[in-house]
Image (cartoon, rainbow, N blue to C red; front, top):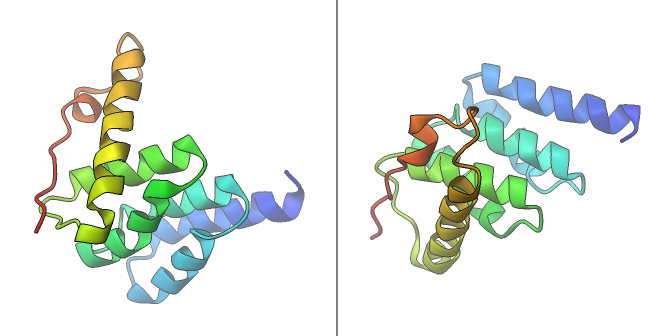
Amino acid sequence: MNAGKAAWESCTSLLADYPVQAVVPALEGAGQDPDPLVRLASARAAASRSVDARSRLTLPMLSDPIKAVRMQAVQILAESSPVSIPPRYAETFDNALVEYRETLRLHADRPSLTRRSVAIPTPRKP
């Protein structure tokens, strides 16, 4: 990663500290960045947004080619109760949630996993 991309990733992660809606468009752009670390930073920053913004930012990430981005997105959506998953994302969400749970099960003996990570509620669907 070059210095410019590292700086953009750092800036994106810092947007989580700004609770104003004005940063949402920047996070949307970062969520579509070619660099997976920038997309991951955008997903993490989305956790501090309103439920609507969180959904808008993370739902498209459920089909990201990078597993870490998908896992971050599905965790944020699953913890955002109550979130309604739009019908067009329902299957993608279900697949990502299955993948997330399989990943947790695979790494269940790691001390870095918390009880919160393992016991994820499933959001309500419309």
